Length: 451
Image (cartoon, rainbow, N blue to C red; front, side, top):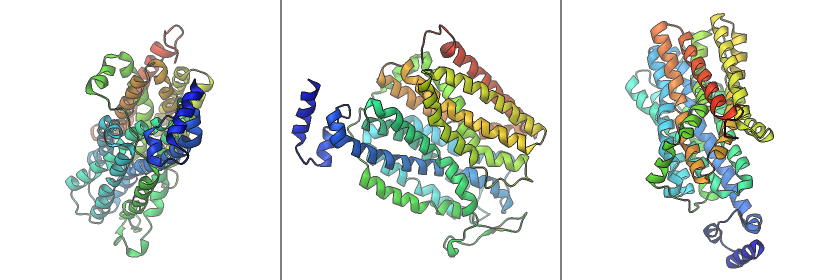
């Protein structure tokens, strides 16, 4: 019967169907359709979407590589103002994620990706212009830095869109590539920013500012302007290689249905402990290093933490599959995360950069494990694929607030206590509660849920 249906679909498409005709009959679960037409188109969309998402993460965390430079090149902002600016992209990005999830279904995956990527040009060019003048006010930077946050919303729309191109047997790998490689945009901006800060591009982007401590020329605008060209090229790739699929449109009633389930909130808490800390530390790392270890130049090594965290995300999912238990991998990773945070704090208190940075790298590694393993838990807790998709989108949105909360917590600690230790006490308590939740509801024997 299945073979007959497959042959019928292929007959209706004819020998040489157009791309539009193939998309109209899209059925990746049909093996014959997938092999003959679907796989090639799906992979084109995946690779293009993945790069567009990587670029979005670059822009989303771009400010984190700039913020620590401001007062050294002539700006005069307080710790509270600096950390507030660092938190803004996270606040805006997380809020955008709450509704970006549903935009591909409303406007089409290609159309929305094209629009949301083009939108990145506004903060890139705006900040590049504003940062050349040290008289630029805090309020002006507040608005421009907030605009960077729209890049953070692209994760939810990208993940919501790309999964529909693949059959169930390939969804995990496709979404893992899209999310994991996309997250690498954080380490990419950390890796390239030190290079761009010293590049004049022949004076194309304007005159340098002078570092008041070292006397070095700093082209801070280059960190922004340099990404305008890749953004435009990405728009061309999206136009050529991406497609609009007829995606399901969620009604408000169906969306609200997930909020009455306690597991929606429990998984949101757990995933926030993973991704929230990953993106939060990524946003605040350079500021923390500059404040605690000003004698150490980490411009070339700061990318390592986000790189490890993003790289370990697929490994976390793989381990969860291998041991057939995302909850146990999540639990053990959370325990290791707790130990890492404690050692980070001890390194700060001892003013030992080696201890601090080694523990921070381990901390980033554990966030990757938690991110991959906890995302694997959701489809097993929510058997309905539709509800699973909604919960995944919601948890991803809320977890992104970590990029806002962690810099704000650091700023609060410095403003009120003149040291960051109280902030890490808060994060330790948060992680302990997450361990208790994971054990009590999912990982303990006879919990009633095998995930």
